[in-house]
Image (cartoon, rainbow, N blue to C red):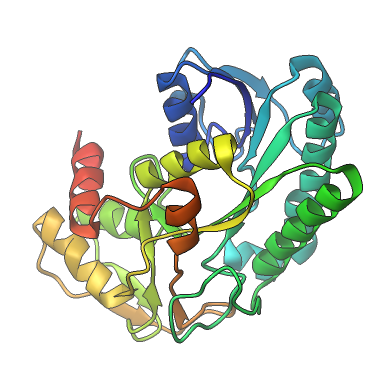
Amino acid sequence: MRRMRTLVTGGAGFVGSHVVDALLARGDEVHVVDNLSTGSRENLASAAELHELDIRDPAVETLGAEVRPDVVLHLAAQADVGTSVERPAFDAEINVVGTVHVLEAARAAGARVVFTSSGGAIYGECDEPATEDHARLPLSPYAVSKLAGEEYIAGWNRLHGTSHVVLRLANVYGPRQIPELEGGVVAIFLDRLARGETCQIFGDGSYVRDFVHVSDVAAAFLGAAETGTGTYNVGTGIATSILDLYRLCARVAGADGEPNFAPARPGDLRRSVIDASRAERELGWHATTPLAEGLARTWDQLAK
């Protein structure tokens, strides 16, 4: 892969900081846009240049013209389903209006964009692992805003002749994940187990998800930035119930207590698993980290 100047929005956050690490490891010049609302300076390697800025600020467009990156990896987002249900306008301001500013920043620089979408949300309920051609049936404002972002990507490609890429991520987990956000169920379980607290499961525990380790996701971003065209799912294709996930987390934590159960939440899907065959065919990418191994690595980092 050729070395590039890269701008990463949300680069001080959970997934973004791992992407930044991977870019730096291959020798890229990396600029990060983050307002530090959920991200942290401590997540960032010193070699990355941080621009403390909100993507809702039009100044992002000016920054694009100044930095002139080769590629923009757009990970900044409002990513909590519950927040999107309670504050849909706030969700749209960040995920829709913010994305437009990022697209214009990339256009000012002549850069391509890799947009972070959610395979775990926009497909809706899926009886089988969803391919990229599966019907898109979002069930939460968050999912709707991500789908809107995808349409802006496609519209800019038609209007401006760009070749922006979409990555639809499954449920990402790993070190640095915040244990308060809904999407971070692994982080929440491991954090509570580390504190000796009882874990809580919303619903009956039978809801299933596709859990992909953040190191695998970072590798997908590098591949998409170099050779990607179109839309790619990034997941394992393996269905794991939330109850089974809890038991795996309890095992690595050496705990034997049972979880509590609470009513399911609005917008939660019963089944969300995605098929990443296209990414393997076209990018040469596939997830390599088994869930049990990834959980053990995440627990080891938490225990340090």
